[in-house]
Length: 435
Ligand SMILES: NC(=O)C1=CN([C@@H]2O[C@H](COP(=O)(O)OP(=O)(O)OC[C@H]3O[C@@H](n4cnc5c(N)ncnc54)[C@H](O)[C@@H]3O)[C@@H](O)[C@H]2O)C=CC1
Ligand SMILES: N[C@@H](CC=O)C(=O)O
Ligand code: NA
Image (cartoon, rainbow, N blue to C red; front, side, top):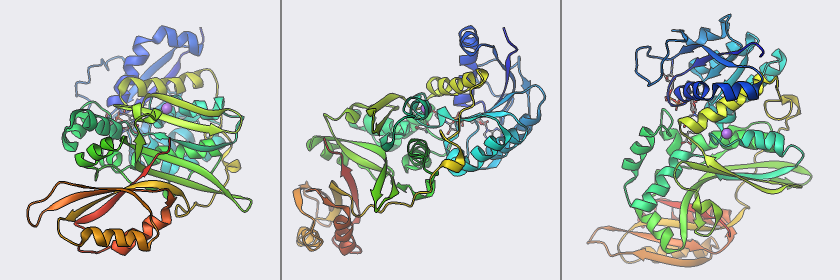
């Protein structure tokens, strides 16, 4: 058999230790599939003495992870440290500059610096791969850039954050509180080092921007993703959605909009109400699901574990196997110079049904003011529910479902209510997914 492919592993947390376990457990099978053995030669992390449940003694230890790129016994650097900048980015740049291949699971770094790194990798003639960065163990990057390569894709959407999906589906099943379920998701290794990236939708936005670039052949544009998370969702919203026949899911949606012969890029991450009989409503726990629509293939659905040590390690090692086989591929499925610069689409003209939740003081006149704003902005109300009766001076939840109409009308109605005494907190708007 050929010489081993030598790996430097930077980062020994959830994913890094998963990669060691996977490479050790399936070594023989991987070597047969890759055509050569995969050998970890060196490792690096913050704390050398920490017990990680894996034996690190066969591997050389590097104190400074950024210098792993210059080791003579390394062909591929695997970056599993995280963070869009800092040591992860330095290591990535050093690796490519040193003529070595880079595998990373770091969606934050790819979303912010992916084009620069891809250009550097093209110039250096080395592979840059990040299957684990989007939807963890699901081979969605491979699926879009290889399996769907012949198609013009105009819509990619789905559930892209395991932590949020775990929180929402567990709250729904158990009625437990947000904070309690979040700490469980952290313990299970799903959450980012800073979990606000998960719950505020930023992690899903990183992934959506990468998918949109690969799917549409567009220049990656993370800054234009319109992003909202799940931190304002109350148990009462989940109960209210259930009473109306919906579940709540954080969904990323990217779409190409054609107008006047040019294409605009719509990218948004937002909690949505999903009908209980929709396939995305059955995506529970840390599972992710990605739907891609192409002009010849129709609709593809990718579903599987979006986070966690085993599934994420599986995607990392798949990239390593590709490199062992000598497959370089274009990082964003085509050379960076071929990616099209697309202006951002405005969301106002999009049409849809919306769920709008208000927390209001329980006093006369409040409902009249809210419905007047809807009338003045031309928002048609399908149903309106007020929950409970508060003690004097207390607040109640008012949930409204609108008929289908332009988003700009809802925005206008909420502008009319901005600063009103009739609202105890800013309203929460969630788009309703069609059947
Ligand atoms: N946990 C998951 O389910 C998934 C994680 N990812 C990505 O994989 C990467 C790693 O994630 P996890 O393993 O969950 O993180 P983690 O926090 O469990 O592990 C990070 C590792 O990097 C090391 N590290 C961090 N900063 C360092 C520094 N300045 N110098 C030296 N070592 C440093 C830590 O010591 C630790 O060993 C991140 O980019 C994350 O976004 C991607 C998909 C799924
Ligand atoms: N924090 C992420 C990990 C995988 O990308 C998530 O929860 O999905
Ligand atoms: Na993936």
